[in-house]
Picture 1 (tube, rainbow, N blue to C red):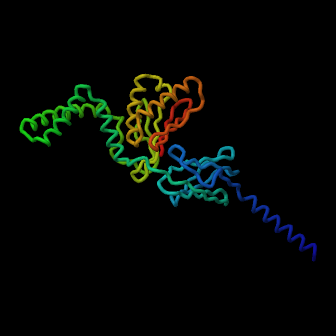
Picture 2: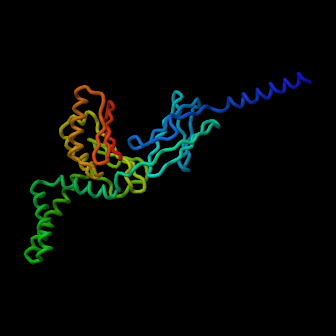
Picture 3: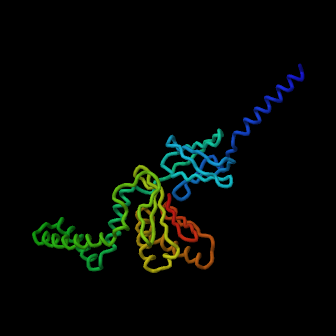
Length: 285
């Protein structure tokens, strides 16, 4: 009787052991993750080949595990998110903290596009645009036929110049339509790209990506510099201060320094990342 009992216990233990073997290990480096660049990078370890994850009830997705390690990039939103992880029966839930909005996308695209188009005007046409502003202000104070005629003539000239400038800026302007929720390239030229995380019309993060080789060319530096300055102004930072600090940091890299300090301006953080092929400038709040 005792022998049968012992055998029964051993058999039950064996079943439990085999069942345990079917469950994969699953760990993460943190319980809560924060925005880094434009996304939160959820990092973890498992002995399974794939990890399935679901963000706040959205469609489940799978990711291949490499050497026991996985990284899930979760675009941040203005709300705290739950991320459910599953591997072979093992489950774990972690969270992604809410991120702050840099600015409203429509407000940014309007100011950015208008300023970028204006930068394409010749000095003569820029002078006409300034003259138009002054003439329009004078017309409001003293509405006379002569003043109205002057404003009308200037408007015609400036509108024609702006049409030409828009053609020159084509491909460099932000899309007029608000991008769908998530991370996407909103501008892509041969000299640089602008990538944004847009959620419900709010810009939660932006990244400028410049090829390292192209950045050494003066023409590229000028194109990139103009767009970077306008983006900086558009998110509420001081473009002059940021550009000055950015110049210092890039010079230190050319001198052999391997560390680049973040740049702060009016509550906006600029982080510079380097890869063999590209320079990344991450903009968050």
